[in-house]
Image: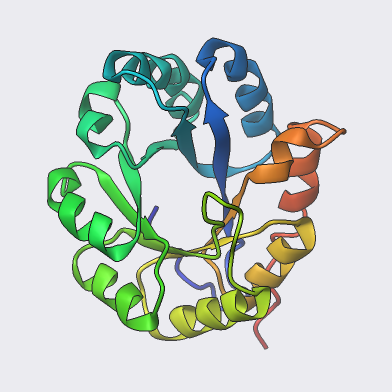
Length: 218
């Protein structure tokens, strides 16, 4: 997930970062995930696994890995760094600076280490200094709470202006995806209601992908 290099006349379109629902039946979800990934350009999939025993968690990840990695897309686990290698994942996403700081050295340099749940600018900068491959802004907490979207946009704009480490902005709606592109996000994370969209996740993703077009640079 390297940061795109700006073209002379137009900033490259951000890519999608797909966040799964909590997965229990991996075999049953594989078809839905595969259709969604075939509908748009996806850079990474964040696999969220419903709590279970370690062996079950590893097996679920292994079932879904070919669907993701077979398309040259990074498979990241939501936390669970202790099983990332055995599950064949490309890395993990850590929530909060403390969790990231504890786990980053177990992932790097062989695997991707991403960080979200960053409360302050200082936390985001510290995560970058400690080796985060990307930072994420705007993802909801387990209870559904997330900062105001204005605050998310402000944080993305600040990061994009100052830092080279890629920034992922979390979009709850298609309209938010477009705003995050304008703010300078390198990747746009989508999940949540995507999987419950009455049109199907693939159709919803096509709509979102159509909005990932950066403005032309004068």
